[in-house]
Length: 162
Image (cartoon, rainbow, N blue to C red; front, top):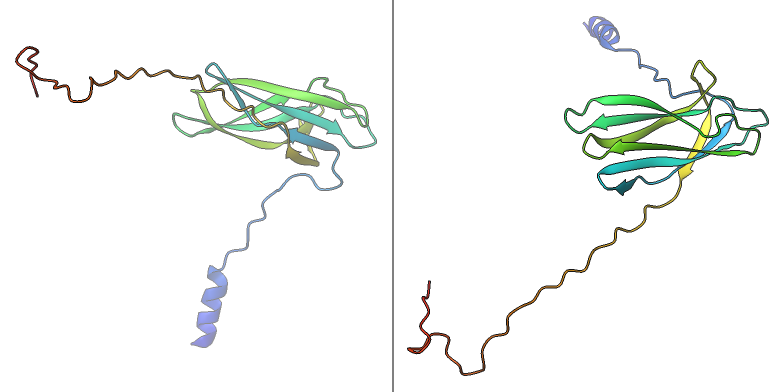
């Protein structure tokens, strides 16, 4: 009985699924991810990429996953880095303008190089903070009540009380 149970337990156990976490090895690029900024109904996502390797990185692009507001479906987008070829210790930037009403969240997936969009190892960190939103001052005028001791409803000045 015990051996039957052990056999059933072993058959029912599933092998752990190995998830591909990305390329292994020393990082070739360092990415600074700026906080998204809002501008008149659109969101601007951007940041800086620094080549921290000893070789040239060509056709650089940033892979982002955008989640739609309507149905929550993810959509992947490649954003080119300007300049697209980075020499060692050189910096480039990336920027993407999206409609705020279309997308709800953005996830950074990685850095791609070459025409085949080969993923490379990278490090990342926070970039520029979003500027504080300026709140427009609002002036509210409140009518002052009458003089102290003055009645609101008098025979000379009748008003309807709800």
